[in-house]
Length: 303
Image 1 (cartoon, one colour):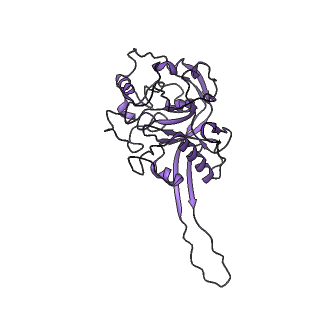
Image 2 (tube, one colour):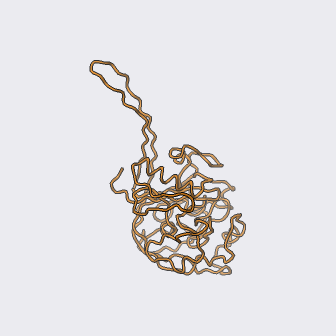
Image 3 (cartoon, rainbow, N blue to C red):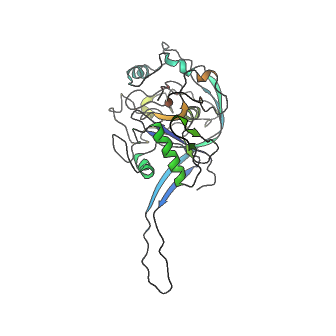
């Protein structure tokens, strides 16, 4: 394993829930071996042992340390809200806060430390290599895995860490699950890390202020109700954002580490915020093929 690996991040999504993996290495190759070397004795002919090896290659992208403006002060009746997104949000079958965008304000300055992030959502093939199952509804090795709970995502992270000889980030179970952010294994991103990466980080030295992750045109970068035929799609078929990450707008909702709290932005830390210490639901971001793809600083339903 590359010595440059720091603390790895994974994102997991939901509409039927799916997942994105964020790692701290530029390219990680996970190799699983299942071999037992036979005892070799002098002058005794032995058969060659065939090695069963599975490789899980993950392309990674560096997100440089930087400061960005997180959140939104957009009101429900302002024309700057994309009408398609607004309609899709109203039609979603998950619970939304009655305050609309109140959980996205105020806009506040947040500094995020450097990390690496995966280019693609975790595929069903990758999930099967780690978890030995496939909960997805629409099957396809290169489709993002679906129907994954937040607890499934945490288990995936720990197993992936264990496979690579890294420290597991998560301990405990249920609502008492805790994350050791100093561990060198894999984990979910915080909501702030997710939004920073989706917005392109400090890739160009200045904010692009796109509506979606990589473009103002949703059709260019995301799968949503109007263009998806209401099915999940293979990873990486739309354009990436400025730093090369795919499908952060639409296709599948993505899990974050944070507990969901509509008032959290009002008193959150300005350096590497990690969400409330406890609540009832977890935050998800990004939008999906079954509804709208959310604006970068808009649409933060609880999971």
